[in-house]
Length: 248
View 1 (tube, helix red, strand yellow):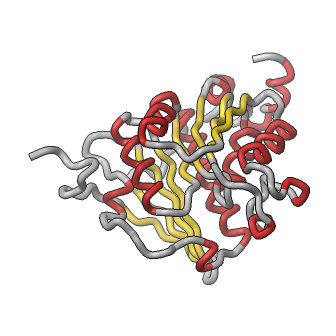
View 2 (cartoon, one colour):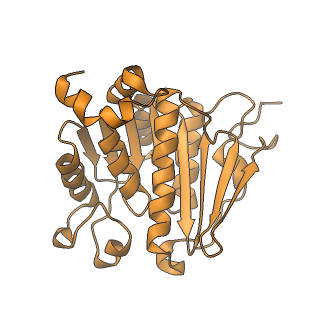
């Protein structure tokens, strides 16, 4: 770690639980962020600012005017650009030392598995069940920790799935295929809510990567922004889960 890095990350390094050793773990880490929307935007910005060495950004969409109400990594002048390129510009402006890799196509199963295997952690910022289930399956199979977040209307949730034997996976939380349209475009969302949830995802990612504190592994954190209430639920492994249940 050079002098500039020691200065840039000094406020984080002075935390006894992080220190130089924890900061070095972040600098050496590779995080796969899938979805550069409302959740992926703040998560990516805080992970880049915190010094995660390599961020792999995956999103096939382009920046739209309707995104700018909540997707803070993008700007008005970048409307029409690929989200991964828009995000890359913002992240490098924030921390030019961060290595940014971009993937602007929808990953097929083989490509997803390849990226998950290479990552130290996966952060899911997507907004549909099919993609979340695919990410969960790849993450559990290869024991790559997954930080999952969701936000809609004025409600949000965060959990961590490490893929350890006996622990739950995302499919245990939502055993059905979830065909209903639960996207922000169909239901709306409060702008700062996704910032809060995405920021918590970044916190959980940093804790998981550095081994600091107690993560939300096996727990679901729920936020009701309308009433400003938080709840934490214990998640149990579903013995009938097709992803993480033991055969037989």
